[in-house]
Image (tube, rainbow, N blue to C red):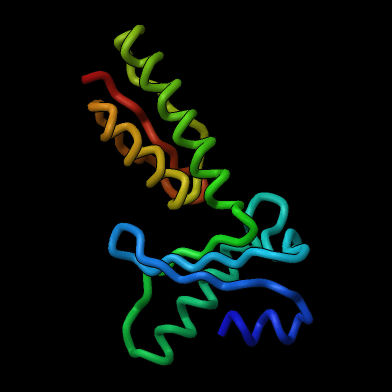
Length: 138
């Protein structure tokens, strides 16, 4: 599906497939692919969802694959992990919960996973698109 999309759009890109956390992880790199990401990843999210639907159509099973283009999600994941670490430090020093800004599901998962590794707890609250993570003291 993704190769066809790149061909139709006349874009160059190499597709790598791996498995991360029991999920298929697809990475497209090469050429100028920034317009396939969008300003804050909204185009990337849409392409990922279309790819999941294409997999579901072909296999009959819902896919949880993750798609990254030009390292956007990898960079975002690093920045979010840093935010989680800084927030955890602040929660530890103040002893009070901290509510973060609204985030999408991918962003919230990165925060939750990082907070869990640090040894604190977190929970999501609210409804999309205003759903956010609250980091709590131990």
